Length: 261
Image (tube, rainbow, N blue to C red; front, side):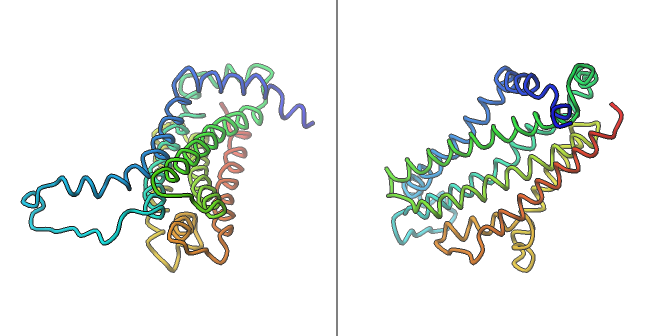
């Protein structure tokens, strides 16, 4: 029974990986994450220098005083801010996962082969998730290395927890978008669902009474870790975000298994 449900998974995985390379998705993901990782400490280091280059008359009467030199915390604050743009990339990459192949009449041809629906969707999820895991590892390594060179070492445990929260946030946005791509026939509608989820997370992060009990808690915990405040239950945020991702993928699987192609 299990082998039947996973029938054709290997060839489907190979197809998805080849397409990720051929279409440039792999390169886009790796470059985007690497720029976030390397650019964050560099931005924190050069911001005071850039402010010094701006003539006072161009500041409109506003004077910015920096009371201390940038620190490791400033580099990580910039890292979290820059990383929060990556869920949008996850949405754009996942919106056509199923809807795009359905629109181009590729999906019926694939499922006419010895390929189960379960294996088809699982391959999509594994390759999409793998891209973002690889990107996060690259971004984290680049940021840690460059931060060490420019400022000093980062705390390994807090940094690992920080990147875990950020990765789960990106993964949940991708999972919600895959749900939309499975449920809707339009990639645009799938993108709307994913972007709506992302915007809602940012909005809820600004509400202290709700933020810690929603996927927005991932952003709150990441900010706490950057500020040196260790949350009482940092992994609660990961559990909430992972729960959203798992629920979205379970719903996508149920819809994909039952709907007509």
